[in-house]
Image 1: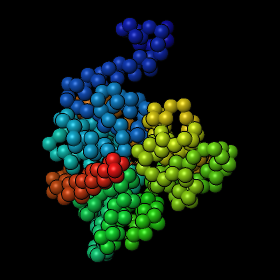
Image 2: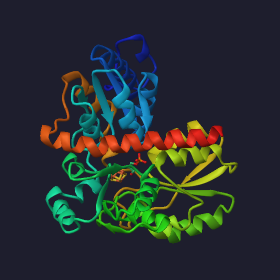
Image 3: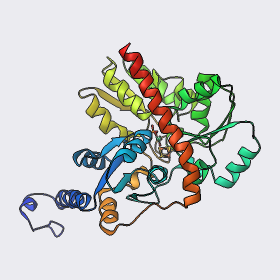
Length: 349
Ligand code: 13P
Ligand code: SF4
């Protein structure tokens, strides 16, 4: 018998140790979620194991906007946020009375890291006439300095709205998304120069070659990608919008330019369709991620179980910062809800 094969319990018979461990771990996490009155909210970029577990336990898998909304509306006393740190912080900003745990507090985001609050405040001070709009991928302290928080699913619509009101925008931190929103809306925007290390790696030339090989494929692109990649897209949108496009478009084959964790949900939403990953810098080039966010990858069943069992990896935010950040975050949720109602109203007309 191999040394690493677990020998106790009926499920161990004939199974490799890792699968037995995994099943046990999942069982323990399910039990802990119940005992701790906790709900698991996972981002599309986390491992399929975590997404499946969130779905099986009455939790939720979504984009960053809907994760915030779901956690805010759910009655559980503990929110377990599988994603990156800004997602846990947004949950805490909205729900100070709840305990917010994460599988790994070190899971950051290059956009968040690119925008330290002191430098960002100086940038805002230099543009006092502008409405400050920050992407959700920022720290609580940066959100506290903002007028609006947005995610990619509402960024363009908010820019149109502010433009109609005659407001000029200071945008941070993603320069690619900001540039895309500026081009599409024609709004007056100054941009912070951050970027996402995952989306930054998609390569237009290689994508063009892949498109030539598969001329029937539709190209779906997240707007955190460089402009040259966005230009080759058949559809540009947030993670949720990309999944919806995969589901509703008649096309049977898609080239997907975002984190490959999304393929779990895309395959679920559009069974039978084929998904190809858009090319990144690749091995031997400058690729740091190869279409998978290294911080999203820090979320695992093991780290989730450990954190939940010990009540570790809890999010705390200084109360003054939290209160100031709450206003623009609530504004984001209200704006998104109003937009949804308007779309539904139009649909019913
Ligand atoms: P979404 O807001 O579409 O979930 O994207 C978050 C993110 O980190 C994209 O890289
Ligand atoms: Fe941040 Fe990019 Fe990772 Fe999204 S994929 S969490 S933007 S580093």
